Image 1 (cartoon, rainbow, N blue to C red):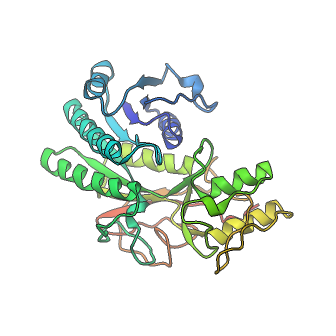
Image 2: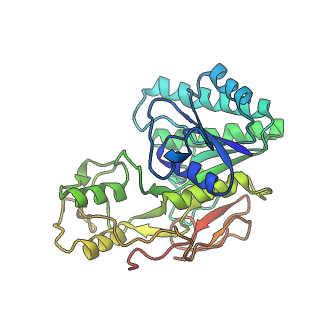
Length: 337
């Protein structure tokens, strides 16, 4: 079988391609401008990994992929870069690209299309856990929130009218190898520590973060396995899934890992009240790779309780919500040796 991964040369896309290969699935990956050859997959290029340069807003170019390759499933991960486009081009690229991908998947008769949404859709809700059947606010503070909500509404409506199976994946905060934009906190702290420079947290989105604030942080290879499960599992009970670690990690936990790994780290900007962060690095976190203690589940269940994040607990293997379920990638605490 062959899966098309749009945006397959991206950060999450390349790790997702690797995860698919490891299950025996061949892939076609698309890219718009940037070509990457990471060591963990480059030997499969032009063999089990077919590569096509195509813009998802190019209808003819996209449709031609179905004539060249026998595509069984589609994982739609392609998205414009953060801040790369103005408002008109951003609207056109997101909506036109989604339209053409849906049209192509329907024309090819694929078994399933998985759609990369984001936990950003929960912004504006009270403290979690955030479940897939939560009523989302219409107001959206940035393009990610806006377009991911729009994608879900349009795609699932399209699915109900056409019979095409579409699964919306609300992906959490992802970190790990190949991340390059420096937009998230783990990447800023890690690179600052390695290079012995100030992470300039005051210049990040929202300014210097608070130590008590938390979010779901998931290692990219674990996220890729989750996307693989949602794309390749034969039958799924729901059409919306959170994809993440299944626990809330506080910024303070990141700082604690920093102090453990780099004891001589110096305090950063102390300009905000309520425990502002200091520079450092994200060491000590042992992700789920290598098969040691990895527990992955895709199933339905009753709504769970917890303080923050997608689901409670450090070792999450439960599902939440009744219109969807969390794909929980259980992992060791940040301070594991």
